[in-house]
Image 1 (cartoon, helix red, strand yellow):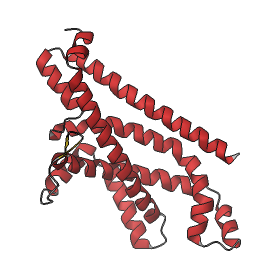
Image 2: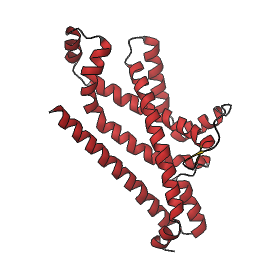
Image 3: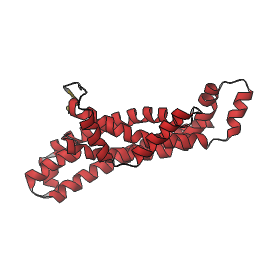
Image 4: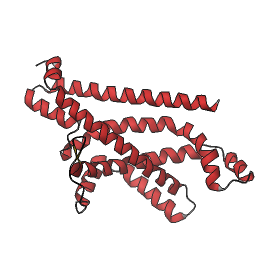
Length: 226
């Protein structure tokens, strides 16, 4: 079977896998960004225990393979009773440990991106805001962070694109993502190369759409500053 025949006869598998990949990626990006913000502010904290914890957390997560982290979370947290049922066809009991592991991994990289973006803002901005009577929190919210967003947005976009591709490892835990369903089609057709071409095209399309969306958002952000 050629690539067109496989795409026509087995399109439902690729669509089902794409749906799962998109859902897992969105949840991972959302949770990873929130946790990453928290870790970044801990890393910038003047309270030494928090700063040390965040530093160790980032070092450990960035220094170990994501697949190892996935297995550790899946087996180490097996005492947690995850909700059963499905969400848009995704088995929650199997998917939630994957989302937790991927979010933890993403948060370490997001934290460093946010920390670097904040520190790239001139210190005089914070001092000027404080001299106007703002508190630290107000100065960070209204003066520093709007400028830091310009620095971190491209790198955050790259992290999101990377995460879409890295969700492919959840196939090893039996989650029906794009690569898992790709494997089903390969087994059915005994013709792996066209199947991988189709999956590659789908991943490429997802990341192009995501990249275009980020470019549009960045463009609007620049216009709003003028």
